[in-house]
Length: 326
Image (cartoon, rainbow, N blue to C red):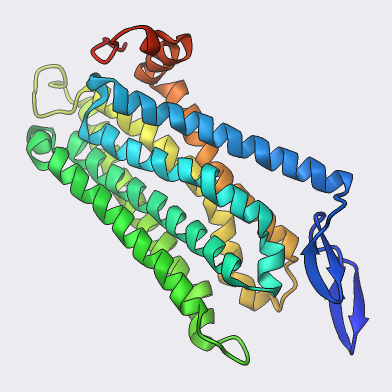
């Protein structure tokens, strides 16, 4: 339980965050940070740097090498851009305007922080939904895959994901402009029920159903005696790509599910969950943006080959766009 002082019969929390202090009963960023604050911000700055570097390498790889100009990699590129923006924009905003501060004093910058956080997380989820649809057609309907999922369709899915996410982010800011004496019922419903259902639970259920269908089809294909002869059966490469992207989805769920479960059941806890716990879960969700490049590096040989070319500086010494990636 956090320590506190009582002011006019109301308990005021005093240790909500190692980088904030109370000044006239208002929470402000301390000008003389403690060792704990410096350690926390150093760690978060390191995470932000890793997120930026890792996802920037994914973006450069997919954009630069012509071999990687495929619909599936276009969706991966969109996901990497969303993760990159988390490191470039959301992390600095969240460090300057932490959840601990914004829970109690929701100003304009806190609304912008929430808008960016929600819109980019929604964009990541929608991109993963699009990737699951792409994998369904690649594995379950390989004969019609190239006609159903082409560059134009991939571009439409990407634009749809970013458009819907942007509208949700703007909606968060507009909804936050409404003034209420007490917390509005509609705000509570949107924050704890409707919002999580639309932006997390429903897309996740759809993705899990799709990947379950893919898994069952892949298992059936693996047992088929015609696996090497039938052109209607997905290739080994497609199944490997599906497994890799399923791992991406699994890691995403591990990082995001605790936070959404927490905010969903938060009203039932009567405020017994410390803000520091909710904030730690929020940072766990944001750290998910760091993990995807490591998954690609572990599973995808083409990413490792592209990484070697980029890091060695060969891209600066000659035209490597047509390089054959293993």
